[in-house]
Image (cartoon, rainbow over all chains, first blue to last red; front, side, top):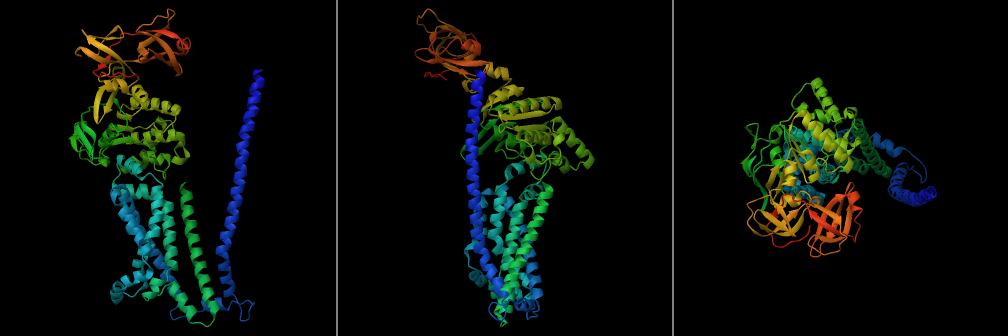
Length: 287
Length: 348
């Protein structure tokens, strides 16, 4: 009898247990379907204009024909100003801006989190402030400073000062998310109780645990620098975007404008992919 | 520690605290939340500064030394292993900071991992091991630097009951094996009583009693200690001639200098025994069982005495003989009891 009741209880238990599992499987299927549908809609929303742009850049002289003329014109462009130095300067700007931003923001954020927490709201406000200032207003403010800089140095690399300010809100947000995901206070106290100085805590304990956040900040900064046009153009410096603009303006072939835009997007996309790949490799190597 | 005080704005976290821990001793600080036990530990570790007072370790004044120079090993309540380092690297971190040679560093780190029984997990990362294992690694890491004092800040509170009991015993075994002076902070009285050489019961930034666990339990120095450590029945009584009369029964006093008059006597549930009452006559020590709580080997029985209720702790086999509704006669064992001057009596 006991065996019978225990068997029926087991069967009942199985039946009861399988019902929620089936429900969960159904929910999961619906969720997956929803994900695919949304992914497709948004994918098409972003992809279709890009495909249209590429298609237009490959448009021949007659409507509906194909031609590489616009791309050839882009690659054979000799200036003025020449294309290659503009690419070089933009890449250098991306590196310098990223390094300066990380050196400036990472230690400051960790220090504020660990030592002067009351200042964190002020720091957040200061870092997010550039978001609220339109680029044109920023240029008005920066113009007198850059006028003075130009007297001693005309290199477009000087744009990194402005780009660090522009990248600050995005980098701050990415780094703050990373810092919030770890128990920085306990980790720092554990390290200090083992004999670590503040510099050791910052650079050997907290910063290595923000690897993903640092990579994200880096990607956002690079993407911003690669796509920046307004400030460089208004301050009369030549970066990649300004260069592409001048190429498209100096040609009668409208397709060049689109080949230039496609090339920029492709270039930035490939660069970000490389950075992401390197970051993931580093992360995987550790864990 | 002498005259240690710490204020957070208007809140007094520590109020002129004095505490001396002997070499090789394990002292547990026990108390409710906000009583100042963690603050004491943090001041000792140098993670916070005292407003006033002095901290001396082995005759050396360390009050103004930064945490990194205090030579204290600490295990935290929250998991505190460095996520980007392996278990071995975590344990070796303190030695690395002390510039111990790599081979010697690894040897000592492995020795510590062996001590906590985790030498097979050396190459794993913290996220690959359980919470209990993480705390054991944290203990190994704290011990690896051979600190003068080991500080344990509620290291078991995030663990489940079984792992908690196992790790508690392991901490005590290792502490005795290594012979390290240890300060253990907890709000769990069972943990404190089981592990410590002496228990310090704290309240409002002060130590109310610092004594061996048996003394804290059986001879509490203050009503607060009696009520915080273990359960107590609060029964009305009258002091006269060095004894207290509770419901017609004379009981000896812990403090013989208690002035005569009405008091509240604090009687432990295990000092109360019950027997089935077949006479049915009402009396000051007869009542009706109204509830029984199963605790494993023992059960806690609640008895209604008419004007109040009383708790008795019996073996479960005895308690099952007295179901709810049974008439029972009570006996109070003549253990020394503590009294408080409070006139209002309520049952705990």
